[in-house]
View 1 (cartoon, rainbow, N blue to C red):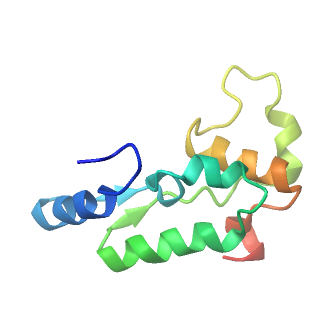
View 2 (view 1 turned 90 degrees about the vertical axis):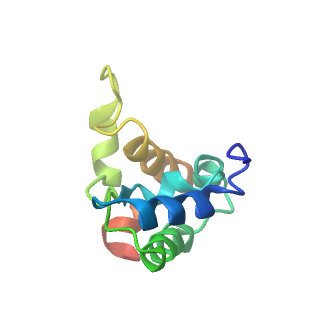
Length: 112
């Protein structure tokens, strides 16, 4: 398996969903190997986040954490905290995207 590039993530997720007796949840924008790199890339578009949500919904994921409440105007309030965002992984990724693109969270209201 090659998890470092994300090549097998879809196959593994599908196998887990099929075999699990309990609901399976994900954080879609962290699930692809390029998620972090894509979010800080100037070429990343809001559709990237929505595509991952749709893709995983079609796979049969039961629930998702999508960080819709992180807003551009709140980012200055997170500076100087021990943990910059409430969700160090997902929330920070969305915050980084907003800072890089100087745009509102696409999962808040502009595209979701």
